Length: 448
Image (cartoon, rainbow, N blue to C red; front, top):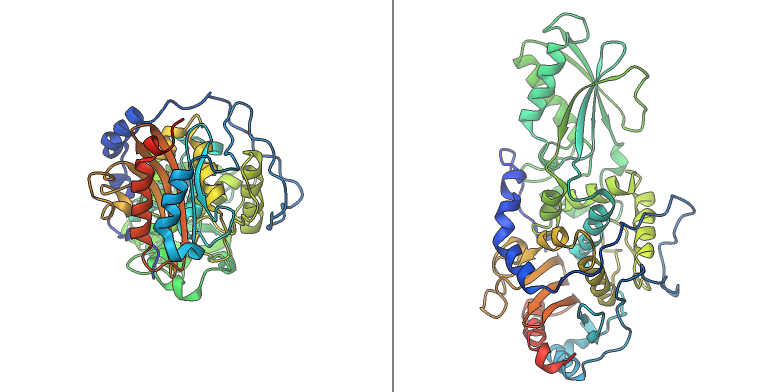
């Protein structure tokens, strides 16, 4: 089954589809019903790069949580809700991991909460939290045109998912206006395209069959329309060269283009001619979480980690998770999107992450990036009944045999953090809906 995501069209703009104003109605309801966030604190700094963090963390004790933040308890405190959820999963109990918590850190109910499972796109809850915490809600990705001392140009990028043909036309115009590489306006433009090597365009754990589809597009720095048209673009630099050559020719010039390594430093004396910013972070988060856009999530993980070496980005992401005091036993993060089936999360960890982020100074931006039950994103067509519609802000995840839906459910007694991961359930959406309705009744079942 193809993971959930919105199609990418070459003549559309994600900026137009993810403007903050489109979220104000649902977010206003969220803020009105949600209890106040915990004590604001300075952003925890990511540890300086050091020895590699082992990918398998089973058996390691969790570090203490940041000062002043609630910690998810280890013992279930609401037997009535626990019994109802166990009855709901019934004979499928072996396929499920479910954890439910409240803002004080009480673990209200849990079924197999410490069992590591394939989480699919619930991994995006990590990559987006990492990006928001470390880069902030106003950060933008950049694509830059440089003029080098010898009169040639270099184009560098950070993986803007909205990079499109009008931006390329602007780069061509500026290069020609600045005399090309011959010193004569309208002359020959010698342009270097700084890109990652082809062997790292796809994470090694992605199924080859997924790589032909738009949701499995290659991850590159200069990615026109996220390296997807209707399906994935298999050679992004070749497509980029074709589009740039056409743009330069249409404006009366000639192009001499070549690829260089994105890891090659700019020569001394390089001058920045133009910087094209992406949509701000809150739009990128919405694209990754609400629409489950794999390309954006992968780019956010790499840019936040400060490296496009995926192994190093994995280590730095895990180091950040450790610094948050989260329960990492059994957790393994191998990509930023969840398309790799080697990822492992526990529902206990996911519930703790949701609790942590709801106490974060940027909690509003994080929660407002989620899909909304019966209203928006990958949840727009499910949980449309009055009990749930507009009341569940969550991240979905779908792979063959995998269904995960985790997020913040609004109840009459405030927020509930619900993490549900199924590996092998016959009717996962139905069961998760039943669990959510049981949690809606938790204020009467679980007195504080």
